[in-house]
Image (cartoon, rainbow, N blue to C red):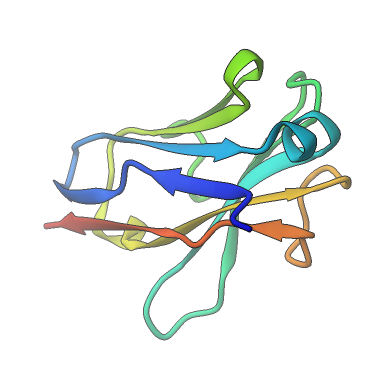
Length: 121
């Protein structure tokens, strides 16, 4: 049973923007912190950003601070990742994750299947 579903990836030129979405089951969304990770070809999965269960806490990786924004839409059990000023180094498969712990750790309990983001130079 798929419980986290990402969407919104695609191909964009450097300097452009994309918005990723992650729809969760109500059970997972209401009980967990949420976050985004990414994995580029040949590299390990890395933390991008996390948002607390209540939405009041946000924790960003230094590499995306000031460019990415995470938000949480509680009525529709969805989180968003607004990505601005994209650079080629942002190219990766982006994964949504959920865990009772905030910030969401690499060992998160729940994972989506990933969505590809490609930034061309």
